[in-house]
Length: 245
Image (cartoon, rainbow, N blue to C red; front, side, top):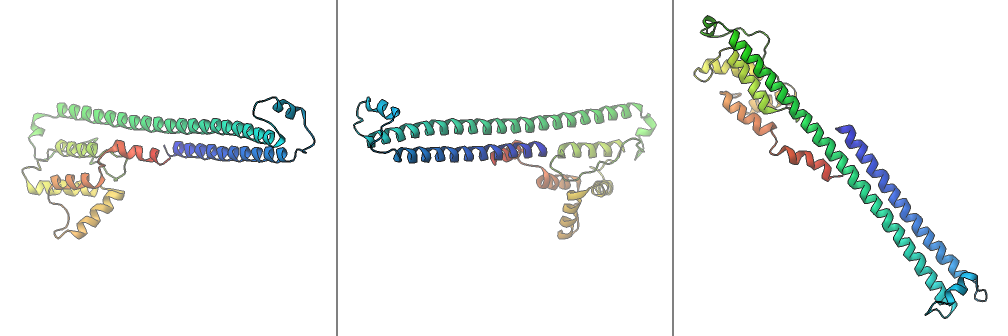
């Protein structure tokens, strides 16, 4: 996504430079026409001058010069409007390409998250069906192939999927944290131990400011985690870079 944005910005800068250069060239041509018209001798009348003498309202050489300058100015304005419209079309095309790429990346990310969620759910269903009745009655189970997920606090990480995976791991180990404070404290310690990067720094700083250290319940931890890292509106956050182009 970063490469596409950089390419779009480079394309916009190039189009802006071309528009500025075109405007300068139009202004230079108009000044040249004015200078050439002012340099026409009063006693010399060219073929182009004779042609303009036949037009109504042109009676002398000054009027001819003025008419030539007006026509040249009109042509310059038409050319400038044409170049400006071309620049606008290029800007709109680059913005549309950037928006399309962002939407494609977002859709691909959501599809990957859904696939991962489905795979995790299938693994849990298979694990549950293979558990013998005697093992299901134990206080804690030994789970193979699953581990407590890690969370880094990046914007491309789905908090909802992370919370679901963490709860799934706790359920797989048959840890009933909702009815046992000791078990809940142990589960919370496992969750905190697997925080990485920004999330780990956030929890360490938050725990240092709290009177009793970190959180006491998983519900409070989840609420604070969502308030810190979950955006209010992901669509608006993705559209912000487009409006700055």
